Image (cartoon, rainbow, N blue to C red):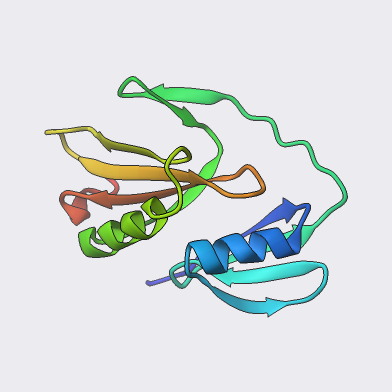
Length: 136
């Protein structure tokens, strides 16, 4: 069964969020209003809901000697799409990306990079050396 996921997150600015995801990342807008925005994240629905204030604290964790945000969301891409997305983001962002190969020479070897959106959320883009090892 092929399924898409949906996630809804708070935002303080629909316009800043829309600009980042459309102009900087190249994603398409779905339905929207003054109070919320749907975006197409590789055929998955991400919704941002306008709120006055929110507190979202979370700890970091360490993987392969790299400090990573414990709260993040993302997408698994094939190698070509991953390279294209990295090149797109690398044109405008130099200090928000963490790029690393995890589990090198092990089952589940993957390349990942993270970018921080204007709301403070981290988005992970990853690709597996062997795609069938995604859950192994």
